[in-house]
Amino acid sequence: MKHFILTGAPGAGKTAILRQLEILGFPVVEEAATDVIALASAKGVAEPHASPAFIDAILDLQNRRRSTLALSPAEIAFHDRSAVCTLALADFLGFAPSPVLTQNLQAIAAERFYEKRVFFIRNLGFIKNTDARRINFEDSVRFEQVHEQTYRRLGYDLVIIEPGGVVDRARRIVDKVTGIE
Image (cartoon, rainbow, N blue to C red; front, side, top):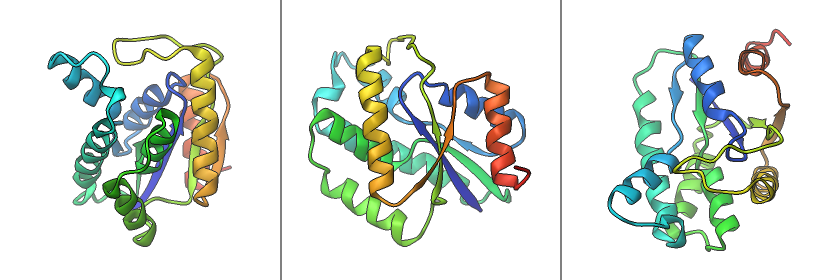
């Protein structure tokens, strides 16, 4: 199975694109940070991102979700973020990569789990905040740059998906992975 990553800034439309890819019949793996934030919030933690443990909690949930595809007969799957995104988040928040994150990055590189071609979803020019997404647009743009630099540094090839409608953006991704374009 080929595993493709969707990445980019918070609020860029990754989850909406992932939903469209799912509608088109592709297996998908949800991003983890939003659910980690929601769980922490339910436990009364106001700023879970202030703790280095936040990074490993995201990584743990990402890995559990990633493992759900082990029995899928599909040829192509899409992941809303990856451990590389978690490294970018650690960098953005000023945390050193934990041993668990470092080991995970080494493992996915060694097993070549993800395709080297990554779909980089550009920001929409604005951000709509939610309970879990409380970043301003300026910081979101900086975070987008950290993501881009991190993926490039680790040798991934970025396919830029510019702003547009959800269906059009998903179709561009499908065309790229199926060789139509």
